[in-house]
Length: 358
Ligand code: KG4
Ligand code: ZN
Image 1 (cartoon, rainbow, N blue to C red):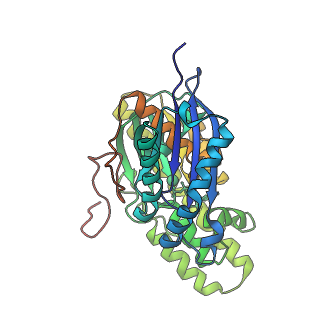
Image 2: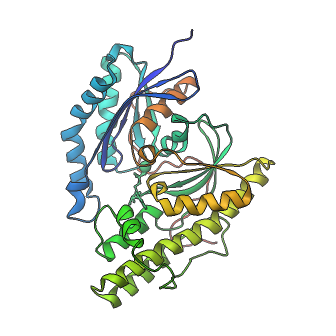
């Protein structure tokens, strides 16, 4: 029997301090030996968003305890671990550096392999924790910092089909929640209060819906929500209508753009066989899941949603990406540093800023 690779994963790119121990199994998926996530929601709640310095301090205070808890829960010793994988970007450098440096230190002092993981690759490979998904697949990555359609060809091989030209989808949810004073974190509260509203009440813009392929834009929608929110003051029913209309507009945009991305995927892979994976924190939204499942049924393609606990930020996906990279001998040296920007497809055009032509 060949030895099963086991990794410790560490994640501190934003406001979750997380550590996990993952072992590959005979089914080609992962045994989750432990998965600890400490969210900083209460720290950032009063500010309505993540404050980098507070996040970094909370990581520093918690990281040792979180890693020790992951080791304890896994019931294995550090000697039984083959390597350490830590998120090195993209994200807040002050936050990333904490997990990355402790990961590098553990690897050095315990003489283990070290892998610096791209957080986006963690999300991209996250369905593999529980499902043996064949490459290539189409990934819709929707999180607080990123919104992208990618062809996942293999580990370390990505082709970007489209991305947001302004805000990320999670950011649009968070800002909408803030404008409507619905609470923090924004995404889940918009989803909750949208259930109480009329989704057809407000007609909101769907930016670049009929152009720029499967690229996306949410800034104009956010401005429209701001404009309407200033008119409705504290009227609760109207707030719920606006939350519902915002979410409905997002669903219309995602449906249209995902349809385009599916066609692009078919053309690029020269195949009618499409597996669509929807990952990242926003993929926890049930209306988005239903909407994209309906589209998949119509287009006769398969859709896979990672378990909700692996959609939002976690270290299991980082350890898993570490195992996958280790098996491809994609090891890193200990002098690697944190990166705020780190695209998966290095050839993809940068889609933000003035002068952008669509
Ligand atoms: O993947 P993630 O945990 O962190 C990043 O890598 O950014 O995603 C966090 C984002 C936040 O913007 C949060 O509001 C959003 O995911 N989110 C949701 C829902 N749950 C989390 N957005 C919409 N509906 C939800 N149910
Ligand atoms: Zn994430």
